[in-house]
Image (cartoon, rainbow, N blue to C red; front, side, top):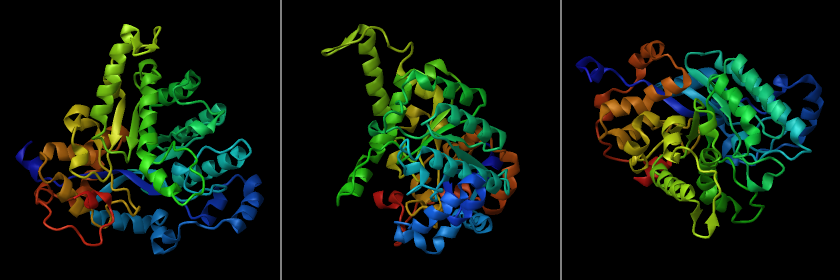
Length: 401
């Protein structure tokens, strides 16, 4: 690294942020024919999360407040996942199960209302926001319409791919060849296919332990989509498709890929234990496709969660603040960076904190440089080991330490 670049502030691009309109704010973005239904639904809707009823909720949609918050943290750009509850949903889109057939039409209208709101909101700071559009898999023709709309309306964050729990039949699993039209279109339009932690879990029912079991198993079901896409040959058939799994770390990937490569070797021999295989083995090892087609939105990683970065490739890892979530790093992002990145080579840090996100999502680093010069943390600042964990920090990155 040149002497001048070594002193240049890091360009922080959070590859994991969340935003959405207020529940009432979505109404004007709905297709007018659903607004009477919305009014009836809105009267009955109550936010089940009491912790989310305070002033923090405005950070989801107040553009000026958000820019101020992120600049204090040193963040100059963001990839925007959904957060608030769209019309006709009971919870946020990225953790909702696929709608039942009877719910699909209205849920699709609600998802499209979010996309319209998001496109308008991102356009306020287009160089600093890459919005991720929503699609549903219940009807592939409708999903393809939404993918085209997302591309045409500048949501360069790509599409949010829902998980498919086993109890969501008749929706096909992600390894089914029937989705090839979707992968074709995303590849042709050069749209990133995103998945986020929390997707793909089954219905745990309403029991005292339901939330605890969901949190315990959440990462398993999220990462399962990664395996399904690889073993389903999606990346073999679509070599230019870009897929990222966000808020799931990356320390798990080396062992998972080692296991998949081992299975692949046995499949090529025709059997593993009592299970016989007649063809079906991929031409290349699973790790080949991961190295070519997959990225890891590590989000607020602890030092341990970056172990294995040499295996998956530093150029494949994207940092995220998860703003404005409680588990995110706000308002202690600078402390988090010192905790996790102090001992890592600044060239690698610069890649994970911004350069990788710029390349994947199309941010212009030259345009962002002026913002980074004003508020970005310097390599010298980040290299100072954190002496004390902030007492009121709520991110698991701090708990792990």
